[in-house]
Image (cartoon, rainbow, N blue to C red; front, top):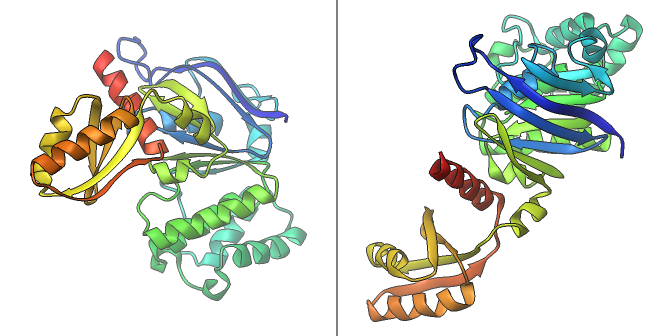
Length: 314
């Protein structure tokens, strides 16, 4: 597959003296045509900075970035014609209706007048906003505003779509609807690079990169990343909880644990050895065990492991 986004040693300092840590430090990123690529990291990791550079909103301090073989510094206008960009705070005009916002963004993105009506009708249907064309955007729900923002970013039929945490701040139903729309966009052949703080969304991506303090820690498919982890996961539900926590702390082979809902997820060195030890200790302490099993490693486990490892090394 062709490379449509490529960065090499991309670095960004916000301080001219370079005395502070860089927002980006030598980032090498490759996104292939038609790919859904996820960018994951905590607040301050550099996700927004990276997307702004790719969107030609800001320039890097050093390194290079190309979209569709166009240089972000030398050819920004050509890139913008082929790019849709939805920042975290996409600037819809609150006093304009849904239809007026779409017409406005169609105009500023150079969509020919003879194409506008058809394209806007397509997007209204796509985003399920056909019944709300006259509603001012300030009166839309958070989820509907996000869908309108996505439609505006797609109005000029871009080849590449950059999305900066598009589902942050919306309810679970709206999150699901937005991802259904993104799936349709991918099926239309658009390349999508999306940043997200949600690990369940990262699981949907073909390729994921984890960014931390401006550096890429790891890149691969969710399945590849999960297989690379040097631990297994054991899931336990038992009462009383204080006994469960105490046993988890004291059992040999338990590397770490975290509470998820009403159970603990334990990172262990060898589940075949740890499971019987946990069962024996919990029963000896009089705990009531309802769940004790090996569980699948998921992206949240990968993310927590890598970030904690970096913080220990810092």
